[in-house]
Length: 310
Image (cartoon, rainbow, N blue to C red; front, side, top):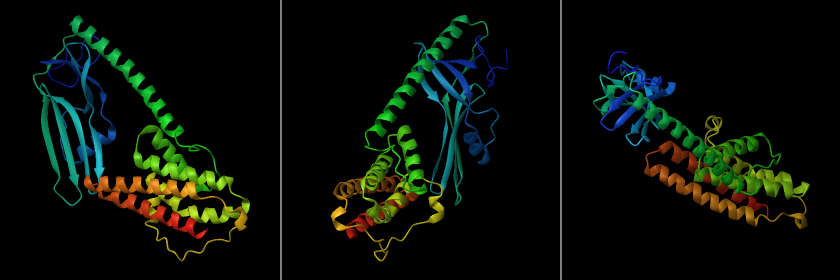
């Protein structure tokens, strides 16, 4: 048996495990490398490797997970990790403020940990059954999440169709599709809804009207790239959309496409993005709020350009 309280104690089944007052704590693997790196960068000395831990209750089910994580909001970078040291599960949170004032906080999450003996067959069986059950349920949740993501995409007409509107359009569409499939994010749904509506209008329009429509949709595509967190957009900065931008020659008036549905969609998407910007302000996510308001202004510019095509 390894030294009691160390982070390499093992039960009979080969899983690092400790008994505690609420059941058993098991180590399921290492923490994400970036989480560990952020914590070490704060100057925190870690005597054991950070890990992912599950607390298994006496009913044989996983009661809680301790996985840690990292975050970055404006001028703050932080991470939380979990380690077993000296018979306790420690939660260590490190925060780095780029203007100074770094902080590290340690909290005992589970005290009185006792190594599970190699010959404790009953504990080993309970732990193994709990892990198998949780992994099965986790796989079912993952499948349900994939189905939900597909449903969110399918709810937007034409969201995943190809429109041949250029590289920027394709990149924004690809990023938004990927994000909406993974997360139920209102700003992502709003941007993809507007982008798809524009793509459908462009594709159905007569050839003579397509250059003018592409010009009108240019700010919209820019807004979609912002909402999609396109890393290249930051290099371009906020674009000054002006009324003086000249529109390409349009086709015959009799062939003019009906833009009323697109304008209505843009208005709805604009409201959703503006609401999310307000939420970002309320949660001190200043950079997110700034970016979303840039997207709102870009949608306004597209609406104005569409109005000039009448």
